[in-house]
Length: 243
Image 1 (spheres, one colour):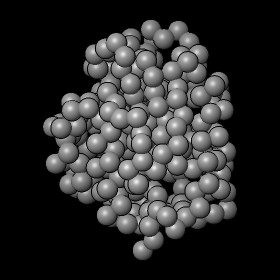
Image 2 (image 1 turned 120 degrees about the vertical axis):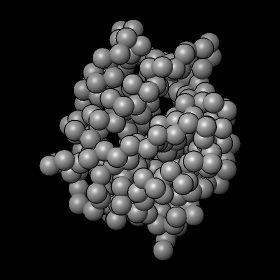
Image 3 (image 1 turned 90 degrees about the vertical axis):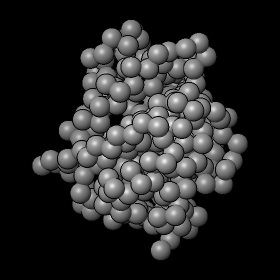
Image 4 (image 1 turned 60 degrees about the horizontal axis):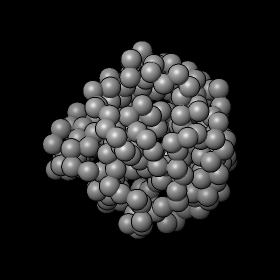
């Protein structure tokens, strides 16, 4: 077993990760966007709302899901290479993310943003933080996301559960959230380097989040005929509200 600290995350190849996972909108990510958008659209925006995307990595679509509801979105990330990628992309994101926004924009709350690219550039704050170390994160936040993080930075079940607890601690009581996972992942390669994972299923996710939430739904997302890579059996999406 290897923990998060055993890996050099600063050399994570953000561009290769995006090319492998997000260059085209996969059917699984479309399903996640649809379900996240349907859930978040019921959020009532309030003045000063702040969102957080934890372990954002090289992925913008969780933050796009929060964008209409927030005056600021903080991207918390540990890896220096991912921080550089986030700073570039939040300043003016690549056209590949337009397809992801289009899925969300079936809802009026998203369509009201005439220029989501400009809105994200104005509202984004990129911040380095180590979630497991309990570093200063700017909490509490009013809405949050954490996609493909807790199960994908370690082989330790204890660190998986700790990451979910720390995520929930960043949010105000009653705050809505979306958390996504690779189901039964055996690890993955990016830029010629191997990275760890811990195999989790819907029962493990429900057990880890159940006592931290007042509302929780864990859905299984099929990979279909075009999985992103070998070594996983699908995706999981947890939607709910923290205690």
